[in-house]
Image 1 (tube, rainbow, N blue to C red):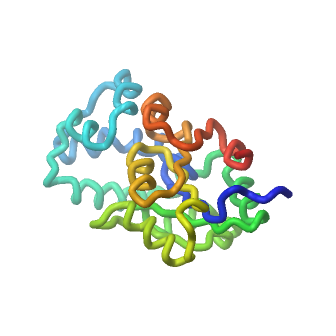
Image 2 (cartoon, rainbow, N blue to C red; image 1 turned 30 degrees about the horizontal axis):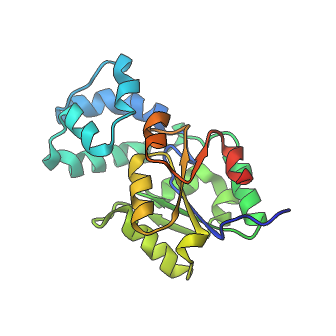
Length: 209
């Protein structure tokens, strides 16, 4: 088995490893009604997926002061309904293959660690070298820095894989390579406009850099 070009791979969870977007759409109406932000027709979904986080919040007229409460409530809902969320097809084989090639695999997410382990299952959970989970006042870039320090990893030997524009932004802040997946939350055109180092159209592509 040929060596992998990166020694450390950091995965996002929602929209990258886990297919949580259908669940998010399922609860969106309830969240919009409860917290009083705009609930556009599903015909606008493609347009919304092209927006960055700040533009999306502005478009939906989400009150910034309510963001922490919205995030906490949505997390609680997901905790209660985690059985509805599954891994994308092919992700399990990607994790197994990377580990077999001696790659350190880490999950960095704002989601709850118990949720991540539940969706991964016992076998795959045991293959993950570190979980950096939960919300952070200092953002995802700070978590990336913590992972690099924990494993004494060189930025140039590290790859971040995510599905959103903020994943790309955070990776670039710490100087690590950017891999964007096209099967998640953000629209492919938006991701490509940021010129990531690697673009993955299906999980198996991650293994063929």
